[in-house]
Amino acid sequence: MEVDKTTITTDLLVAGGGIAGLMAAISAAGQGLNVLVAEKANTKRSGSGATGNDHFCCYIPEVHGNDIGPILWEDLHSLHGDFQDPSLALLFLEQTYDRVKDWDSWGISMKPRGFWDFSGHAYPGRPRIFLKYAGYNQKGVLTAQAKKRGAKISNHMVVTDVIVKDGEAIGAVAVSTASDKPVLKVIRAKSVLLATGSATRLYPTTTPGWMFNIPFCPSCTGSGRAMAYRAGAKLVNMEMPNRHAGPKFLARCGKATWIGVYKDPHGRTVGPFVTKPTRDLGDITADVWNSVFTDMFKSGKGPVYIDCTETGEEDLEYMMWGLIHEGNTGMLDYMKKEGIDVRKHRVEFRQYEPFLIGSRGIEINEKAETNVRGLYAAGDDVGNFRADLSGAATFGWIAGKSAAKRARKLKEFKKAEKSETVAAAASRYSSFLDRKDGAGWKEANLALQQVMQDYAGVDGVRSETLLNAGSTYLRRLRERALESLSVRNSHELMRALETLDLMECGEAIFRTALERKETRAMHKRSDFPFTNPLLQDKFLTVRREEGKVITEWREKK
Image (cartoon, rainbow, N blue to C red):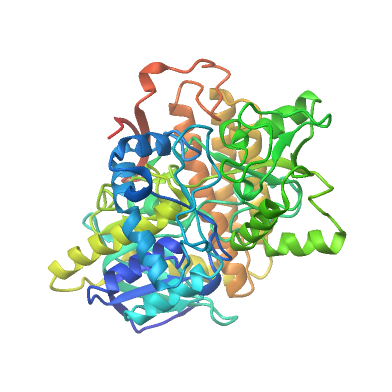
C-alpha cells in the first residue's frame, strides 16, 4: 500500500464532517486554530443529517420561561431517554438557544414561519421541546461556515485509528480514498475529535439483503467507537441498542413529521395520546411504545398504520413541507410516482433494525473529552448523552472550544509518524490489497449481522450461554476476516475497515451484555428476567487496557 511520506500537521483533527464535526470545526477555527476535518464522503452531503432535519431539541427562555427544570425533565423522559448523564443534558440545554440563533443567522431558517414553532414529539399538556425548523440546506451552510473561518476540509479521507502515546492522543492514521488506489496518511494533532456518527449495519436490515436500505446513514458504522475502544477510551451503554421506526420497506426517519394517528387495520387508535390528527403534538405513541409496530404485528393484531385521512389540508401541506426538510424527498417522489395519496391511503409503519446512536458509545465529560487526554467525542458517537441533531450541534461546539483551549497550551507536536500504530495499519491494509483470492467485505458484514442477531439480538432474549457462544463466534469471525479479506480498490478497503470496526463494537456489546445481569429496555436476559432497581442510576462502561477488556459500573452524574 502506498504510504504518503509527508506528515500532515494540524492543531485539531476532526474525524467526521457531520453536524458535530462541522460545528466543532466552526468553533475551533473561529478561535484562530488550525483545523482539519477528515470526512469519508463529502461534508455537503454526509452523515445522518445529510439531506436535512426538521426538529431541533432546545430550550428557549422566551417560549419556555426562566425555569429550565421542567424542560430538562421533559428531555430526560422524551425519546432521548434516560441513558444519559443529567449534568450533560443540562449543559446541552443551557447552550441550545445560542446554537439556534447561530444557525438562523448563518442561513438555516430556525423560524421559517416567523415564530418559534414547537410541534411534534409532544405529550398533551406537557412542555414542547422540539423546535420545527427548515434544515434541508444545513450541511451546505455549515460547510461554508467552517471554510469561512479557515478550517480545511479533506473529503474522501477516512480516519482509521487514533495514535496514542503515554495515554495521550497525538494524531491519527487516515486513508485517502479520493482515487481507486488508496493512500495511507499520518496526521500529527494536538487534539483529536471523533465525530463519525452512529453505528449502523450491525444487525440485519428489516429488508433482508438490502444492507443500505436503512433509516440512518449506512456509512456511519461505529468507527469512532471502535477507534476510541482501541485507544483505551471508555464506552458506555453499549449493551442497550436502539431501534427507530417509520414507513415499512422504504426505511426513512421522520415519524414525528407525519401528522396523523396510529391505527390498527380496523381503524382503532393504538395509543392513548391523540384520537384526531394534530400538528402541535403529532402522535407520540411511537416514541413511548417504540415496539408497538413489532408487538402488534407479532400478535396478529397488526399491521399498524399512520392514518392521515382526517388531517386538514393546511396541516397536510405543513407535513409535506416538513418531510422535504427532513430529507425525505426520495420517499415523496416515490409516493407521487406510485399514486400514494395520504389523503386516501394509510401508510404502514414498522420498527427498524437495532443500531447504536447517542447514549450508546464513547463516554465524555462536560468538556467533551474522553479519559484519554486530548481525545474528544461529539454527536452520535457519544455514549452518556443524547439529543440527536441538536446534541451534535451543541456538543460539537463545546468539543471544538475545549479542544482548541487544550491545543493552544501545547507548544509542540509529537511525532505520530513514529508510532507502531502506523506500521501495523500499513501492513494490515496492504495484506487486504495484495490478497488476490479471498472473501469480500459484504460476506464479512453479513456474517457479523447474523452473529449479532442470533446471539445478542433484541427480538428474543439474551443469556449467558448465548452471549458466550456469540462472543466466541465473533472472535473467530474477526480472526478469519483478518486472514482472508481481499479488496480491490479504495472503496472496498473503506467498507472492509468499516466492517472490522463494527466487529469491535460487537465485542463491546457482548462483553457488557454479559456483565448486565438484569433485564432493562431492549436488553432482555432469560437468566435474569427482572429489572434490578439497584442499577437504575448506574452506567456500565467497557474499555481495553493492555489487551484486557475491563467493565466497570458507575453512578450517573
